[in-house]
Length: 86
Image (cartoon, rainbow, N blue to C red; front, side, top):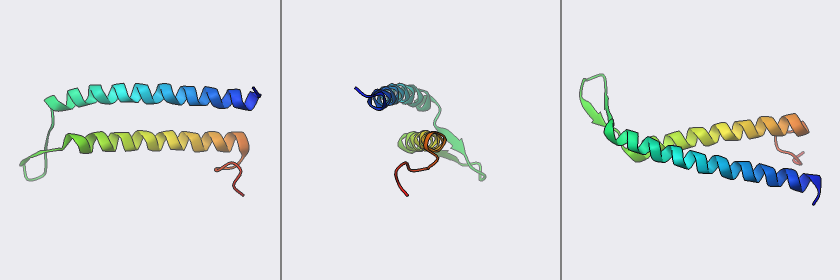
């Protein structure tokens, strides 16, 4: 196994652990959300926020930050945002 293959295997392993951790966190957030899912707007009417939308936006934001970290890491290691793309 070459050093690059070993490095990629480690990155895939850490990514899998991160996804498992985030999945567990989302399960906890869903339980917390079920107890407090009301938000008031400017007209003082009570509006219920759909649980799926909250989870989707949270997941989207976390994956966006993961992508940003990956882009910074690629830039620091190769000098390119997309390695191999000229």
